[in-house]
Length: 494
Image (cartoon, rainbow, N blue to C red; front, side, top):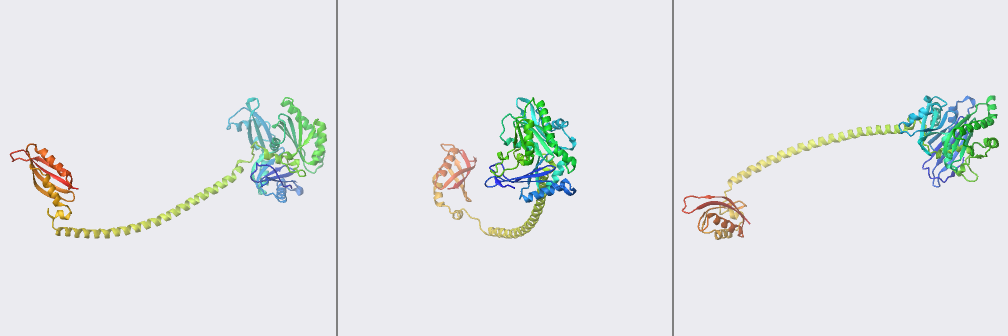
C-alpha cells in the first residue's frame, strides 16, 4: 500500500475503484487532502481453494483487502473485463437521442458473443467523424447480466456504495487520454492478466477495435499446458488482430505497443513480442498520470483502475433499479416524513382551532352579556333625558342668545342699520347654532323689490356678525298698493 500526495485538483471527495476479474481483485482509492488527493492501492488473488464459489471467495478477498489497506471510501466504481463483456465503436448516421438506443441494439446483434436478451447495454455518442458529417461514432458497452449481478452482490456484501460500472477497454481508453500520445499514431494497448489478455487498437486517442483472449483456468494439466502455450497463442492472436485491423482500417500499421501487466508477465513477453511484432514494447508508466515519487510507483497492473479516473465516456452499466434505488429510498422516506408532518400539522392546527373557537364563543357570550347590561343602562339614561327635557322650559328669543353666547346687541344694531326703508322685518327667531331666521316684506320703490332684497342680503353678509345668507323663499304678496314680496332668510353666525 502506498499513500502519497498527488497533484490533481479534479477530485473533491473520496472514491474507490474496484477492478474485478475471474482471478484477481485490484483496488485503488483516491481521497482529497490539503496537499492534494492521496492514493491507496492494493491487489489480491481470488482464492477458490476448498471448493469455494467465486462469489464467496471474491467477497472475502475484497473485504480483507479493504481492511488490510485501510481503505474507507464507500463510493465505488466497478471495472469488469473478460469474455462476458463487449466494447464496440459503431459508425451510425446522425440520429435523435430518442432513436439512438434502438439503432444501437440493432447494430450490435451480430457482434455479441452472448444473447442480447441476457445483456445490459449502455452507449455514448462521440460526435461526428472527422471529415464525414453524415456519420457519427457511438461507443457501446455491454456485459452479461448474470456476471453483472454476481459482481453487484460481491460489492454490496462488502458494504460498498456502487455508483458506476464500466469496462476495461473504456478505462484504458481513459488512461490513454492522459498519457502523452502523438496525434494520429496507431497504438496497440495490451493488458495482460492471468488467463486473460485484452488487445485494444487506438488511432491517436480514438478506440477502434477490442479483442479478448482467454485461457482455461484451474489446476488441471490441461490448464497448465494452456498456460505454457499462452505466449505463442498471444502472438498468433496479435497477428490475426493486426491483419483484421489493417484490412478494416485501410492498412494502418502499428507504431506503438503499450503493455500493462505484472512484472513477471512483462519479463516473459517483452522480448518475444518485440521480436515477433517488430516494434519495441513500452511498459505502461502510470507516473505520467499519477506521479508517486522516484521509489514509489503504481504497478502497471492498476492501469485500468487508474484509467477509469480519466474516462470521459460517461458509460454506466449499473442497472437503473440499482442506480436510482438510493434516490427512491430517500424520496420515499422524505414523502413519508412529509405526509406524517402534514397529518401532525393538521392535527395541531385543528386542536388550536378548537381551543380558539371555544375561547371566541366564551368571549362572544361575555360581550353579549355586557351589551345587554349597557343596553339596559342606555335605556335608563334615555328615559331620564326625556324626563329632563320635558321638565326644561323652551328658550325664548331673549333667552337663546344668552344660551348660545352670541353678541346680540351688536348684531341687532347691524341688522337695524343694514335694513333699508323698503324692507320691513316681520319675524326674527334663533335657528339653533346656525344663526337667525329672518322674515319680512320688501316693497317696490324706485327699484323693483328684488333689487332691494339683494342689497339687504349683501349688507348682512358683509357685516362683522353674520356670514352666509341663504334665501329660503320669496313670493309676491297682494293687498298692497305697490308691488310687494314676502321672504324668509337664514343668516349664519360668523
